[in-house]
Image (cartoon, rainbow over the protein chains, first blue to last red):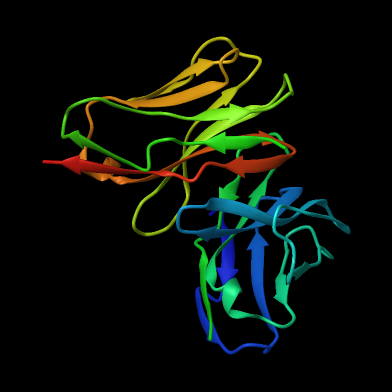
Length: 112
Length: 111
C-alpha cells in the first residue's frame, strides 16, 4: 500500500529534551516536506526537500532541523523543544514539486 | 510571498443541499497548481480536487467541482448533494515549488 508513515503518532516531552519524528514514504517520491498545523493558521511549511541531500527552509524553520540522506526518509529533529512547538505535525511527499502531496497521519506533539 | 485566504472560518449546509467554499490567493506567477484538501476528525489530510492554472476548464470530481477564476485569483469549491461524511475542515492550497495553505473552513452538515 502506497503511504507516508510517521512515528510516533503522539508524543509528550519536556522542554529541552531532544526528539526526532520519523517520516518514511514508499512511493519513490522525490519531494518531501514537513508542516505544522495550529488552530486558525492552517498548515505552515517547516522544511522541504526536493531530493536526496537537498533541503530548504519553509516558512517556520526556527527550532527545527531535517536531513535527507535517503530518498524514502525525511526525519524532523527538535534539538531543544520549547512549549511553542506544541503542535500537530504532518509529513508529506509528492512525485515532483508540482504534484499533489500525500500526507502522513500526523504526530501530535506536546512540550511541557 | 504567495498567500492563500479562506474568508469563511465556518460554513453549514443541510444534507443533500449544495454549498460553496471560498478561496482567494495572491501570486505573480502564471503557472501553478491549486488544491482542496479535506481533513475529517481523524486529522488525515485527503486530497479532494486539483486544478492546473494553465487549464481553463474547471476540475470536477463526482460531487465536488471548482470555480477557477484565474484573473480574479479565486478558487472556490462547490459540494453538491452534501452528505454527512462531508463534514470536515477544508483547506485550499496553492503550489508552485512549495505549498501554501489557507487557514481552513470548518464545514458542518446538518441532517
